[in-house]
Image (cartoon, rainbow, N blue to C red; front, side, top):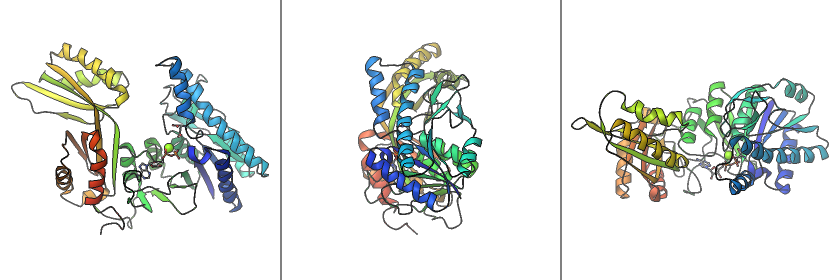
Length: 407
Ligand code: ADP
Ligand code: ASP
Ligand code: MG
């Protein structure tokens, strides 16, 4: 078998943890498997580096920021390779460029174009273990790029695909994927199995246990992910294609995201082109719009409300004030203290009444819903961020996610 093992920040967070991680790699080799490793920076390191740059300049040049944060992963890759070598294992560290990760040039959120795994495969066949830096690559002009926060998950899955691995093992500080963040609901239940589709929704709706793009990639290439703990060796959660034995409760998880801000453009003369007039400039600024709600028009005027990441709130408000003037809209308002709570489940396709129940549960908690959006397998509401914990706990309980799965 060929295995890619990814170790997150806590699993390489100290020399003691690096020794434990080396034990896990050694055990995999002893099972006769070919192994490639992907590592994150030591926990806290990426934040520390970003903060340093921001002390000099609140908006540092992204190319330089990438050059700097990429060092975090190089340190942990080299440390792990040193430890493995001292155990007689033919390990060697590789940075993104050396491991063949070619990306586009959008610094801090680069996308992987391709990974040339041919050299790594050759060396793995000779029992050598590449220890690859996650989170980074190189663009066509040789600039160092990074893949966005949490990007080592995506590096690991991309490498597993390039190396034609049988599985991508992602080692972290929880022993699996839970029905919701166990930090908010300690009674959350660990899942043995989750489909790509559901995991993709959970991740994109805020469950940061896997970077969304890693799940997208895994789904496209059908690469199974085994998410598990590096602190104990109990089996974790397999993310793979939906199978007939998967649990069929209506809801399989609850996700939340506090990184949301809401903007409303009011009193827009309602005619073709207004949505383009609003969202065109936002897209051109590289800002991702999330939930969108447009009101029915009254007397020829309409309102549009949408959400963006909080870091883009000010920039979006400025853009909307300009758009407002050119479209003769009446006003622009905003709120950067909102959050998003979602229930997710493929079972929703065959269970009616999930939305109704969700709204009742929130009403019973006195939680006001500001926006609603749905897809076939999820329902999302935007609420006041102060009420997130209460909403997540109430929904998790009401949909029977605690303990054993609901029948
Ligand atoms: P790493 O540094 O290993 O990449 P992360 O901190 O990125 O680890 O991801 C693991 C964390 O994800 C857990 O500690 C947990 O608090 C959080 N998390 C959020 N939602 C979930 C969920 N549904 N199941 C498990 N963990 C979750
Ligand atoms: N070190 C990077 C981060 O903190 C990438 C990762 O850990 O996945 O975001
Ligand atoms: Mg992570």
